[in-house]
Figure 1 (tube, rainbow, N blue to C red):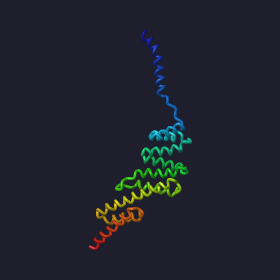
Figure 2 (figure 1 turned 180 degrees about the horizontal axis):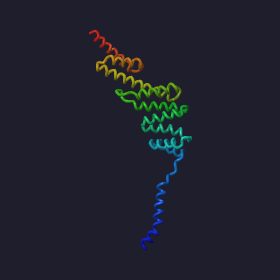
Figure 3 (figure 1 turned 90 degrees about the vertical axis):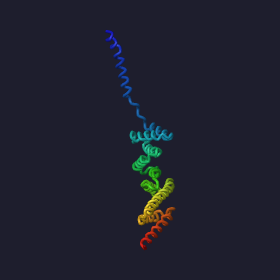
Figure 4 (figure 1 turned 90 degrees about the horizontal axis):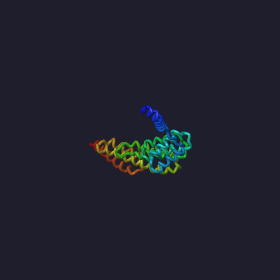
Length: 223
């Protein structure tokens, strides 16, 4: 009898508790509006919490594609990736922005940033220079299509750095062939520098070693 009374007394409380806890567990917090997410993303960005900014800006793009903030969020998303030094992700985000908004006033800035994404991954002289070529292409595209942009002047300086890196790489490879007595291959590299990078300091080095190769080959032929 006592057991039955206990069950009758506490069973309703138990059921209520279970239902209440279940309800709490399944209740989702209300989604943030585009305005709230934009403010949140900007706050994260200004404080240097770039991953938080990335998450907020991405939510705007995913949840509110027709929001007034969507274009700004897409550009800030790319900037946040860049600040995090996620250069491949940043490049892709800038590229997507350019594809979707080709007439946007920020396109010169976007192209410049695409160039920087590649430029910041340029490797040492003795390594592959594919990022250098890609950076140069972006900077050249900017100076050609938007010569009056404030970013065109910056791009000119970066282009020169790219050309210097490429010339140094060619000299490095030429010297490698020269040391290994592969003079024909070395001459091809030195000639490439003379023909393609005539205004850089490496010109005189290339000319000097090109003449050395010619002299050695002439001596071999005469001997």
